[in-house]
Amino acid sequence: MNHQSHIIDCMSKWILTGFLSFFLILSGCAGEEATKSGPPQSYPYRAVATVGMVGDIVKAVAGDKADVHDIMGVGVDPHTYNASTADVKAMQQADIVFYSGLFLEGKMVEMLRRLGEDGQRIHAVTELIGTDYLIHHFAGTNHPDPHVWMDVQGWMKATQAVEAALVEYDPANKDFYHANTAAYLEKLKQLDEYARQSLASIPTPAPGQKPVLVTAHDAFSYFGRAYGIEVHGIQGISTESEAGLQDIQRLVDLIIQRDVKAVFVETSVAEKYVRSLVDGAAARGKKVIIGGSLFSDAMGQAGTYEGTYIGMIDHNVTIITRALGGDAPEKGMNGKLAN
Image 1 (tube, rainbow, N blue to C red):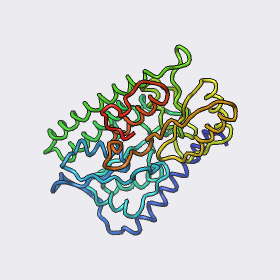
Image 2: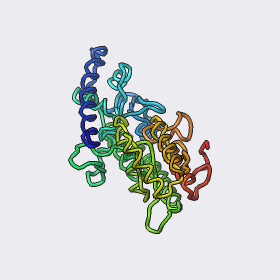
Image 3: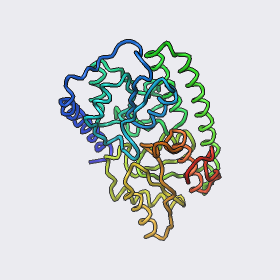
Image 4: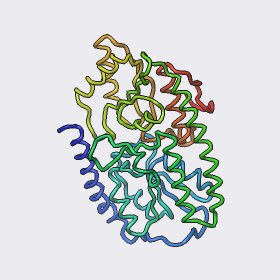
């Protein structure tokens, strides 16, 4: 089976698994009322987000008007996550639910759709992003790359989608949401500029070439397009795709040809394939190090700077820049990075 067929097959399995999981879990939640109507009855209202990157936007825009609960925690892979009974109950009882969309939450897709049909207020934060912006890795597939947050400007659009949803839900506080959104977007603009300046300082072996970023899976395509980096993932856009010997060999060849100094692991993906690259290069006389651990599908520990979206991207930019020979402060844009 070729790589494209494998991705499509995996997506079909996700849909089936999510569909079955929905009914199995929902059977334990019978009688829960999901229909919502009208503005908030009290504050803080209950907001649920599937992943931390989405939850961080909601917290920034909603401020103290909402109590925000993230379903998936640190190091959780959203591509393969199965919602628990408690997760479904939390979404049913929430006043409003946000998810990333673009099939990121692969096994929860059918569940999220059914919750919407049952009357729950549910919003994909990528809903305002135009199709011309989205990346399709394979021609003919219906599901674009979901990792939009890797381009800060893409996540600005997601922030505006959250703002629109909260203003619609709670129009009495629209000025509050507008002000919070404007303040957060200004911080994101600063982050975007830091990323551009830092990554542009990475040297390349030859004029006209881009720096090469090799990671565990294809989560960094938007990052690469936005910041002038040539990105290669061992696995596909979903971690359910498997890397074969040919994939490893192809990337070892690239590492040697382009004199890549470092490759990167990810906090939510097993390290085995990346370590295979290091070993494969070493067997051919090329020393390559693991440059650090990047946040791809999940943020850092809750309560830390890296546990925020800004801290997540600051960490990635800083680690990549420094490991590939560029110029970035050790503690990052805001001097807050743990390492």
